[in-house]
Image (cartoon, rainbow, N blue to C red; front, side):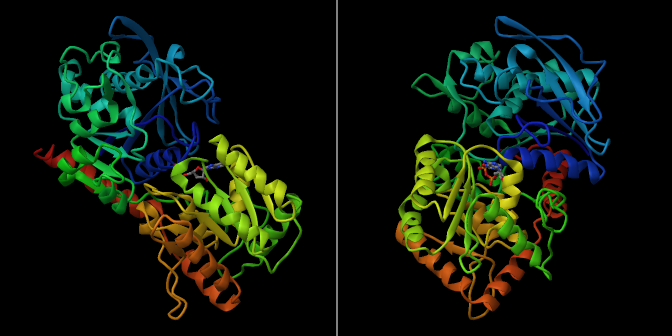
Length: 488
Ligand code: ADP
């Protein structure tokens, strides 16, 4: 099949979070499965010419596109991927994409990503390539279905193309002042859906995509249900309920070429489920590198996360200081984000210099080392569309402690000591008491080595590889390609 993926980030070129992991892996695995899958991504100034180099795409050079009153010029470059078999197109428009970071707080942020959508359509037409499916990701690509529906005639080759919009996290919706519609070429009743325009004078780009795309998906079955409720729908529950028959939940896959302790080049000692000696050495090495005392009888808890409220950090604020005071564990945390959480983690390090370490920033290698060295991974998210770290943790023999929400509920089964079944520790209600209870259960289980090894073995045997997950997307693509749009 011919599938055009459109997104704001993808590994290995541009990443701020899990979205990049998913888009990069999906493109790679679709190509590996024999599809003509091509990804279109902005050419941010931070992207360094990757191995293999970038080649200008002849048919798409110095193209002028009218966006409201402005004319913007862009060119396309192609990167063939690390395996020389992929196609990632980088959309070069310095005026929009040469900024300090992938996302900006600049006033023209909506224009930057509206342009990505329109230029993606224009590029396919000029390449004389007609994807059967445009697979759009998050609000940054949510206007593509809108443009296609509103002005499909501009791109005659794309008349039969259908759209799938994947919602990776509906907390980010792309809400901007209505005045931006004109500069996006969508003003004056030219097809922007009324239900995505609010009386307050704002427009919601994600809602526009949800209203218009042929099919919708999100990144776990449980999250697909949760976002239809007022509690987790973030104001979109009504429109998502209306479209529930076209909404599917597909759990993200894990790239085990990158995240597997058997082969991971970023950890000092590789290990396997049958020989965990390397895991113990990784723990000693990390503790020693971070200046923490070696205490094999104390479990090491790991945290790797964006520091935002969604991740349940308030529960850590409530529970961790006492646990550290009682010398129940060691803690290593990595993450950047909101200042209040940075301050909290710094304060732990200052208060408990013999037990806690915090690194502020983004550090791929340290993230791998924490997964490999820790005994327990803490992820008590308030909500979690899918979450990747809990799945990485399972593979690294680091049982995750999670709240039963979204993809965490779909990927971690509560451990039951009497039967020896389950892969981690799971609590339901978002309260310090519920978190504490399961945290204590985890520490108690840790003290019984045989039981703990059973738990580790259960988790390491789980397989969330992309091979399976790609198959679920293929079902949706095939449906779109053969049946066309579902009746709405
Ligand atoms: P989200 O996309 O909401 O941030 P996910 O669990 O889906 O959460 O994905 C997070 C990804 O980003 C993982 O690959 C994780 O290892 C990585 N990550 C998050 N924060 C950091 C950090 N400070 N340093 C390195 N990697 C990080």
